[in-house]
Length: 183
Ligand code: M7G
Image (cartoon, rainbow, N blue to C red; front, side, top):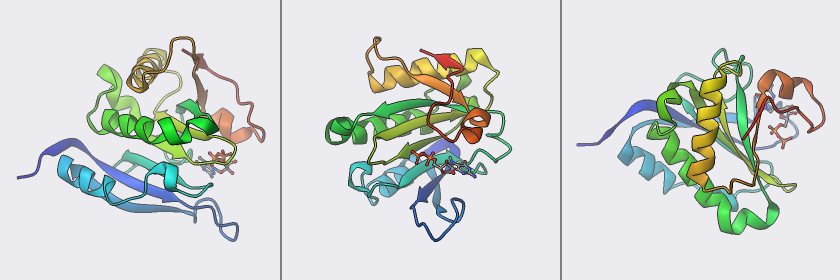
């Protein structure tokens, strides 16, 4: 008998194809709701460090699409960890696995329900891992989730990470979206 997770999760894959729109390039691969199905899936897909640049994985709560426009994300934002180029081969895959285990194990503390999903962007200019939360105005939840995220990855206290509202990210064309929170 399989061990059920507290929630069902969708795994999404994004591959950058310039002939298509951003939304067309985003695909739901599968949905899982047991520990065993999670590992079967994890063991059958490429590690992030093996993906080509421009690809993303997202794992989101069943019913939530990994996009700003989803009603569950609209008012939310993300904690963003920038993974330096030289960390791709030492840290990227283990950071991603820690993030996934925290997500499906509801390990983000009493505010876990505010976590909508997690995203990894594989990019030549520097990889990124993010935790998306439901509401950028719920400061206590946002801060608690950020602290847990940072601890899970074992990031140094001296390294600051920022939280940006999706509404701000979506309207900025450059990469200088302001941080609503920093820890
Ligand atoms: P990115 O892939 O998050 O980061 O955003 P990158 O700049 O490191 O590649 C790149 C572009 O993808 C954005 O400027 C948007 O045009 C598009 N994009 C990204 N996200 C997360 C969304 C989204 O949620 N909705 C829509 N409509 N476009 C998005």
